[in-house]
Image (tube, rainbow, N blue to C red):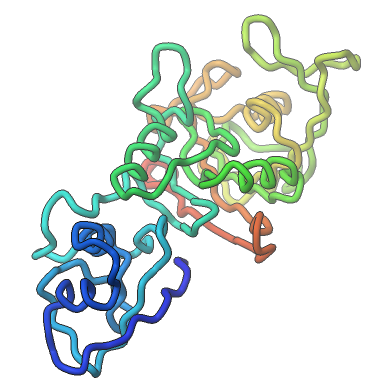
Length: 303
């Protein structure tokens, strides 16, 4: 949730909001006061107001949110909101404060630039959106594969990014996947060494080596659907393609993942979703817990 705003004195007599703000925020220039309104930083009785002519009086409680604060995730512009002022986020923003953002990335969108794909990424879209809000820029904390949907964390300062990455082992990440077949046990652990080859494909290897990295995934079978199963997966180490390789290793590749041996495609993409995430806030230490519902394409695949 956004920070509580700093109180602003209320007028003794009813008058337009902009006119009162110009008086009470003096010596701030009028053009700057307009920007403060346009970027959804003024609260009237706890609600964001952006209309210049909104009437306020002695009965109203006014507050100003800090610069760089984003509109709360649930806020949408009213029908009479002037166009082109506070733009809608490119995808759902489930949590925002001055240090970090948690977004719900859609499937089919790269996390960051990769070769020829530089502009159509979660990072670039978030960068452009923050820029329109005059709210700084995002910093990449981690990545999701292009076809993986769900929760992704971005920092809003370099210090927050560094703190999150330094303590990434404290982050608890839980995924949902539709796999082919079903694991031999209702729940268990998959622990292997993983190594990325020159062809960029990740493989399970037996012998330790300079590029082999220990990896650990927990799984739990949530339901069976014919020749497929819905699994809950805990990512206890963060290796590239870890879940995909681990499930293929036990003979249950993620549906749609032809790169790692899947022979079925239920929804036109790899059936993997970043479902839940929890971690201590990099500045306050408060526990942040977020969840992204299973998207419609994966729900239909299970029907």
